[in-house]
Image (cartoon, rainbow, N blue to C red):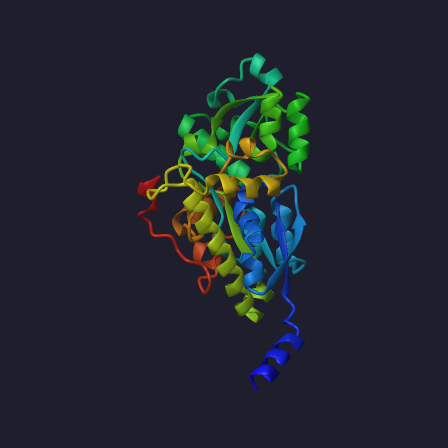
Length: 333
């Protein structure tokens, strides 16, 4: 019987992994995805991610909301929130965030504009400010900087350029004066002295959630087991990330596993490890969602007309799957 059992086990093929369609940006903000893939966390949960790479954030939300993708890891855009309000998608976990010491989103100025006197955040009103699209986290972060630095947000000339490569090209060529630019894309320009850093969003405004993980309504309602397995893999990766780059209080600190983790992220973003380490976001170890911070953002998008209805964070987040962040988090950052 033992021999027959062994022969049966050998002869029986393993169940095929379930393919999940996943939209990402392949920047450092997607570090948990890189870790989960490198360490086989998705595979261990019986999942095979089929990745689609985007160069802007709102299109990821649109793809998930349309059902073309099952999951997305992207910025908290007005497009995402409008699709959530329409019942097409829901947030299931947090992603990258800005925080003091975590330099993932830099405020950069073109060489031409810097020479002309744009040398601090307070100089941003008047010159052009590049971003991918209106109604994105880049616009929201600028509004937060304006609030902290005491200038009129409406006095900044916004220049939507649709993609990160377009922003890089415009900054390098002097066609855009400034931008809030993720460090994965900004560092090559910084190294070539084509832009100057005048601040980091995390240092300028403090803790500020930027990315979330979300799923299509079909996946949430009809495949809850898949969602739970996806989140199990994702949360293993967020825990690994946190243990590599933060101390017990959540402050930026390289721990023993940092070099190996940086290497995984470097392979993901196709950049040298020395460059990657300079532009890492803060990521909650459990992927918990900050409901209060999300509500602040929803209210701001509504105030500028990017969201027509007044929304509640609880209408955007699927609390069957998401873990809420305790509000004492703010004191830690």
